[in-house]
Image (tube, rainbow over all chains, first blue to last red; front, side, top):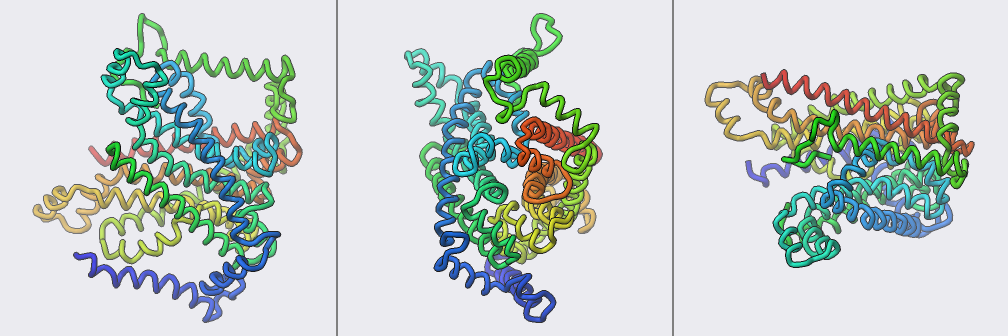
Length: 256
Length: 269
């Protein structure tokens, strides 16, 4: 079956989805207040970009969320990748870290919110720690897997030529593990972005998650749904950027 | 983490493997360090992190007299029931849908665009909408858990079914297998490992979402214990709740792995 012949099915799916959404409201099954129709939500996004809500314009809220995300994600990568690489390189280190890491992995990222808030406050430090706990695991696991895929002979060759551990890490381990690491970063980014939204729902009083909390306490589904769309769109952009990076890395260093 | 292949795990008649011994040593060191930094020297203040004794006292308190509106058993059962219900409803819808999408490209074409529109929205972002629509009820939590557990079960079932070996299908067709037998004897057994991968991810997502949803607002449950303990700056109780959440998550994951082993052994006989 060709791709072209499937297009009517895709169109039917989309028409049915938006038709139902609009239809149940138009017919009066559900009030437009409870389930705002698609166009109302778009209009609300436009309004919130021009008139401040909860103190700021919509894109200002988004910018402050994104800054937090960026710091937390960068921190998870700068700590997680070296830890993963070292676990792949040194067996003793792997055996020491593994039991701690397994324990940490079973704690849901959002369960760290209370400690994060108590230790680092609810402004910027706490949210960064929550993003960190969400994004850390894939960084470690993929760097570890990537390092284990590196040919042992390459490491030995580097050693016989007098390379120190740092040079081995930088010139043999890191390039070899890079495709796996970048794939891990994509997973990390998704989990980190979602953890940030969770943190903002619970303790933080600014950012796009906070817009949702305000919408919730105003009992306004249209505000909540606007924020959901903005959050989803931002997540999509983050993923797209990392996907692009992944393709570049694969083209240069080969896939794993 | 998998063991390194080809290295002798038991040497010189040691009763346990090297990795286990080092693991125990690590955990013992961490526990000792915890005691030294809190109880023995007081370097870490109790408003930052509890001492082992405070942790045990909090555990004792929530087991016997209760905390945040219920005993440990009541709070755990509440969370467990929500996770189980949301998870089961999600996979009861998600696995068949993913299966149909993998089996028939027209069904895939029908659902995929809508799926692509909804998927980028993180499950946690559905919490406020669920609360606006359904209030702080069990139903609103089940709705959010459903959303989070639904996606991985659909995607992985779909991938598993789509990747079933074409030659296997053709061979079964040539031997006269009808649609029903094709599904139960070719597609399902071949896709099972992938389906279970999806279920595991769904279960993990269910726990993450439940904890978040209960932190945002609940009357009972482990997330509720966390949020009340946070409000009271009761670090010992925060730690108790975190540990119980981790154990409950680990146990349900183990249970799922057990089911997986049983089902796969039965299917491949």
